Length: 496
Image (cartoon, rainbow, N blue to C red; front, top):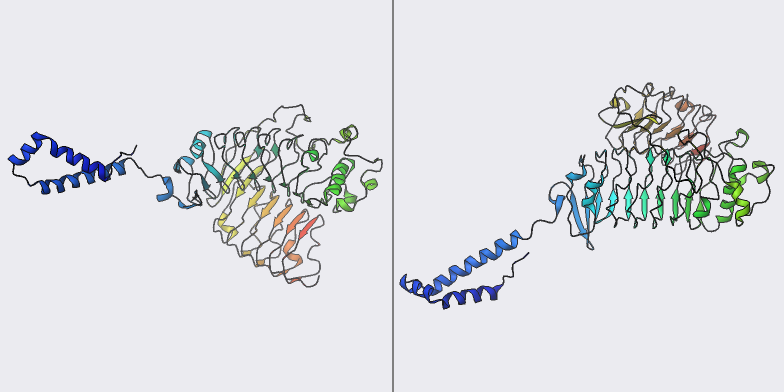
């Protein structure tokens, strides 16, 4: 508490001192000049005021003077702790009297616990992207009632558990893309009653539980790059009627009778929302076809007209979960609140020093090497186990050589986006027999030739946008008979 010292206080105290007879007698006895003594007393009281002021006003800047960079704007403190080798939240001290945005992007966080997050109660925005977070326990964010934006992208999450986001009643924006999420439990988003934007692209989600967005007022939902096969009207589409943007590309859509509700709903929403194209993955005779172009009687020869406004008819259209999701013991309906069991986590046996690795019993070895200054694939060294997914975005790789990937035969996803690649050796990908997704976007390639893609006969998604491609030689895409999505926008092509 600050002491009530001011100039008037000092004068009053000094005057009181001189009214005290014993003290005045002492001054006379010592023959001390009053004016000189007055100057001394003023100096003493000035020192007391300064000392008391400093002692009651400790620094409120937390880590701003040491670990992080800070800037206050419009009453909000922006704390930038990007790439500071932070391994525990307790290393970061935040002020207690100001709302703040905290950027912890690209650090070394592996786990979060509710106790550490209690000190972030005034957070408005929290960026935890590009760390090594493997799991989020239910209620871990329960202290952050003021939080509006949360980024947990580019981590090693494989599951979003029920009540993971408990306490985030004011959250409006959630980014969880580029993880390895396979399972979303019922109730994972049920407490997010103000959530408008949800980004889940580039995960491995095969199934979304019934009523997952029942109380969530979404306007933007990104589901690209997952393994979804269908979306039912009852329990899903009926709850996203406020949607403005719904991105559905790059999934494993099964174009049969069960996808009819999605087709009808998309057609009814086209005028009021931006909805991504659904490309059929199966059955074989429809593979690569746009769902919007396939007639209803081709999808389901025995179909009858479906009125989505009548629950009595639409109740028969509930789509069962993908049979590929073997860890779900039963189909969950709206009344079933059983939790999907949490898979056990295996420790990583070995990982290159330049990357972060995580081994999962079903998803396999997942390797993140994002923004690590890597110039050559050989810098990764040898891994004891071939990874399923390898993320190398944002590095400085210029050339891909013939033998770069010979020990990565288990790869299903290879992301080389936003490097400086201008040369790809013939047969560079020859050993990648299982590769299904290849990202080469945001590089410097100026031409494509058949030899570049030899061996990629199981590739389904190829991203080449934002290069400098001027020429594509005949037969370039012949080695990829299963290719269903090819992205070439923002290049310099004039003819094909």
